[in-house]
Length: 142
Image 1 (cartoon, rainbow, N blue to C red):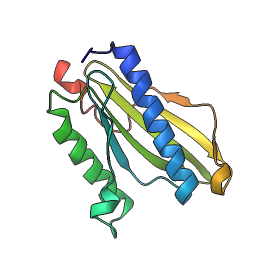
Image 2 (image 1 turned 180 degrees about the vertical axis):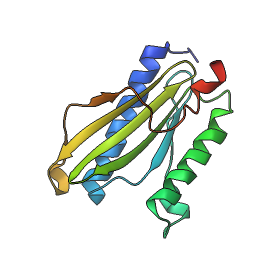
Image 3 (image 1 turned 90 degrees about the vertical axis):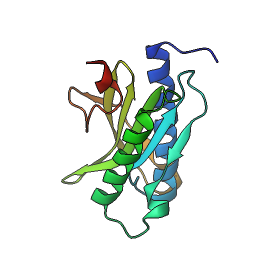
Image 4 (image 1 turned 120 degrees about the horizontal axis):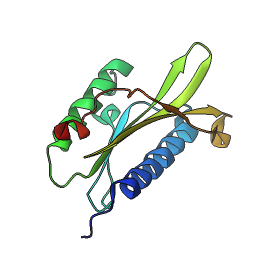
């Protein structure tokens, strides 16, 4: 298994996370918190949907469960990148929040979205200087 460089790994993780989030948005109309891991080669994506285990949980509980899962996963040498994805709302604005981390870097993007049903579309992402949480994976290197 060939290791990807950091920029390639960030890009691949972002692509997988964004597409999974868009699929959920089109299916459910919003995206409850979920996590994603990829191995150091950028392969073997694994998703974690806490709603499966906690069907009645609040958004906060789902977010915390996702964080706890990703923190455990971050300890594995088999994990090269992680992502947390969720709908974020502020007033009447909604967007898809995507935080991606590798062992050496992190990125948080907010994609505004519009539409309904199967026609949801993501707008141009806004990059934030702050992370949604963490860092979880990159913190070991500081």
